[in-house]
Image (cartoon, rainbow, N blue to C red):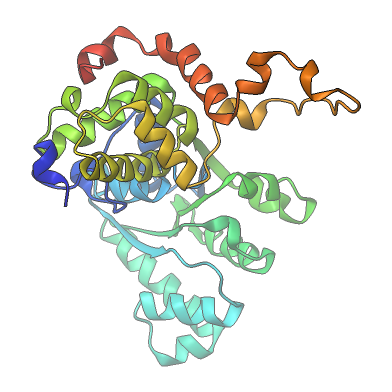
Length: 326
């Protein structure tokens, strides 16, 4: 809708895992390398941890599509809220083991081991990848541990990747899951973007969509987007998309900080400073006229703009040239 107004060939901030919009920071490249190594070397369990929206699913797809994993055949589960019976049925269906395997766990295990052994003999690797693994029950985590135990004298038959939010790492510290944790051979973590990487993320997506980053967002706008998104790529994309829509409606480009703050109010987003700041003490019995004029005048927007100004100089020079920020 707003593409032609900003000189874009397409919308740059869609919430789909489009591979052409992949953006890798140093930590993303490190995590991708770990995933590729875990899959291609048939490690027992590889753990990928990251907050919601940090790009775990996109990274998994990039690993599975990479050259290093060209001989990896993967069964991908992205809805782990299953009962044990449903889990058995799902695996039987994904591995094409037939109706008997869907009804019998013993039949499933026999057929599954036969398939992965045959593939291994041909130089192929079969892997199980579970996304949103923090939602798995302890019962299913134990089932996955047992599947990861399938092996020959020279290696594992079914390497497993578990991707989930930080709660998954916390759960693995529970005594009941200690045996599963002991089988984690590789662990990688995705953290929110810092301010320079946020600027580069925005610029990369705009360029990929055919636009000029310096003509679309001001420096203050990018700083506020980082502050209120907490560096989470999915939230950054949502904020940018809505800010572009608002700028289009107002016939304004580039998008400035006022438009971004309006988007923050619409989505009830709070700045990182507001989230971490201690609550002010309760001041009872203070006459209304005792407050300083500045205190009475300052509200949420004034505080937020001040925070943004404090962060403004944090953008590294490389991002000034990347974005052409004003």
